[in-house]
Length: 341
Image (cartoon, rainbow, N blue to C red; front, side, top):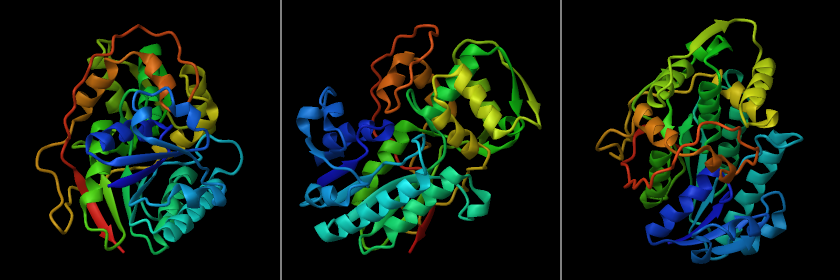
């Protein structure tokens, strides 16, 4: 199948491309600056094309002959009005995909309620992008996931650095109260590859997650145990605002404030789903990776992996770890809820 990936320079996109190649697909990577991809091991196995979702004219030629388009970009952490940038990018991509005859768009969004009043501005924008893409004639499969556990994931690196650096910390109350359903990057990649074999006759939303629903405190405790650290002393307080929390994250971790703020805002919102399979039987056949196993694999990798993840803040000097060669076969999908339109 001829596949185009928008966002191959990002964390998920850069890991998705080799999975698609392993599945026998022809891959075209669209990027504003394709030179960023020329040093990766799989760059000679794909077609690199210059295109920008904010420049409508660049998308038409780049999508010619494409069967499936993966839309993995968002403006979180960028300067300016990120919601407006996301809106323009989605509208441009939808129109270009229609004109090029693309058969399906696969979009990775964020897990959360549909009510915008219950979402952070970041998650509300992610949901809006899904609606904009699905408003056209090209069927859209939207996968919604919460915290992604994997070395280099901004959410995981925030958790890892906070736990590594601080034996005791004062945290906002949501750290111990708000529930989320983290998911391993290996499972996310499997879902993204697997969905293109589903019928492309309508748009649908698939909410996916790992087997456990936990608090951020629970994830920090599990990571500390796996990393051989003492259990961290965490004192929740009600007065630590998202703004102050984000500056605190920026001070302690390699995440820049512009990225930390939308992440913190999103973590305040509960993001979990019930164990409901799709109506057509597309469901898990064995349990996906647990938070503990995913954290163990991720914690074994050295921090410099962060610099290849699509955000380029310098990593602090932590204990060196050697990254093993982890062979991860495809994990079956763990679909929670399916909705069609």
